[in-house]
Length: 351
Ligand code: NAD
Image (tube, rainbow, N blue to C red; front, top):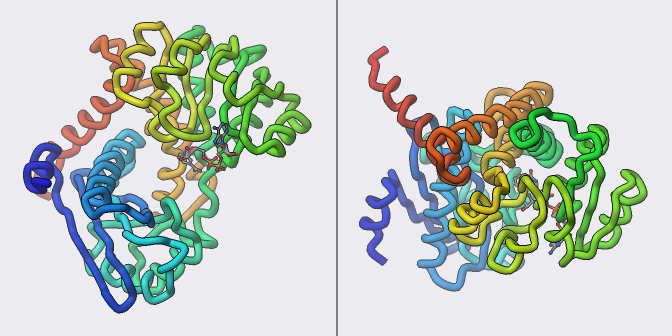
């Protein structure tokens, strides 16, 4: 792998390797861009098969955070860390505290938090050694309610664009995945008068939505083809793909799941089909907004108010998509890049 070619192509600032043999720690920290502020991004613990796979994941995820944080209007850049190894075998207090020391050593250029296979307990160990960690127990708390509210607000902006008003009364919404975010979203939608069609691989989750919210249960493979206004993916990624795209009967795709498009071409195809796709990293930014609030002294009301502004971010993406006649997934990247460029210019002024 030609690392510097890769770094130069996407203009990465820094790629770092840290290790401690005694505690079994191998960690890669990648900082993509810090124009807007310190690089903010979670730490993932994963049993990568090769070191190259881990490097590529760190690079890809760090760049993703630059765009996500910029689109969310945060004064934070993009970074990510990956710890290599089997989380079930090598996790320990000393491993996380060693990692915390390395993060501390970066002097605030990188602020981390939870990602896959990192628990609140692990975060607490990291926090023993550094304050450059967010999502600490007793501070910002579970992000899902804030994410769900942000998704709801973004979905309203999409409805406004397609139907001319934000009225959800009688609108049919098909929700895939009734977990922490999906259920929270369903509650907002129900309150607003929407009709819910839901699916999940866990039967109890479906039952809860049926019993408590009057949702209609749908088979997991049939959710794509529900004759509805909005399809809301809140489970896993790559669900807009060659197999599902032709089933869609909705006018809008707007949900919390990460990486919804299997490939970029599916974003183009949605536009061709006249379906408004709300880019995942813009609409699901409530989680990172919530964590960011913690860095300024956490206040739940302020976090919710900021998450409400996901509406404006989504509206802006739609505006750019219409302005430049490009699919929304490209418009989201353009919105983030435009913000970074504008702020970079401000930073040129000596103060
Ligand atoms: P969760 O694990 O609580 O919920 C996911 C739900 O999807 C579960 O109930 C699971 O059973 C269900 N599911 C899994 N595979 C399915 C399938 N094939 N068909 C139907 N249902 C299936 O997770 P969550 O926190 O609610 O997150 C949901 C999505 O949103 C994930 O993609 C996550 O990465 C993304 N996201 C979450 C947050 C957050 O704050 N929690 C923030 C940003 C993005």
